[in-house]
Length: 168
Image (spheres, rainbow, N blue to C red):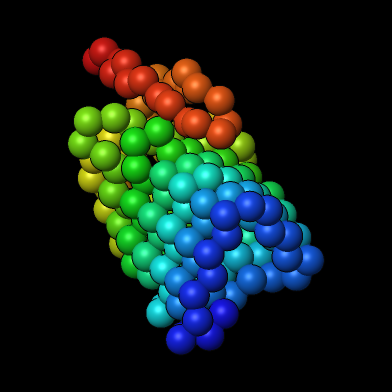
């Protein structure tokens, strides 16, 4: 979308190609993107339901997640701010973090990685957000919260999590 446009999804939206966001996407329904989703330097994405991306996700500005995001290949958190609100989740094959991730202060959120995680020097974490890599974080240049006892207690349409901190 262009810098002057805004896109609000309240039902179901399917893109057969990539989506390049330069303005505002407000997702309150189910978005399915057959290729990549790029939230560019002037873009803002607010997700309160479900986003499914078959290809890559690139975040370069503001991404506010209160729902679930599923990424088929790699998630790049290049710059800007990813807000992971209470109960939100991102599932991806690979993850590269170069920016700030802000979690809730009272309830957890989780980033689940099935393959490879790289946490570079530009990464910063605050609040209750965990990065849970199935085979461990491969590159960790910044201390990364990895308490994966944040477990789902709700359904996909109403994510709810409880936080049970590990000991030690």
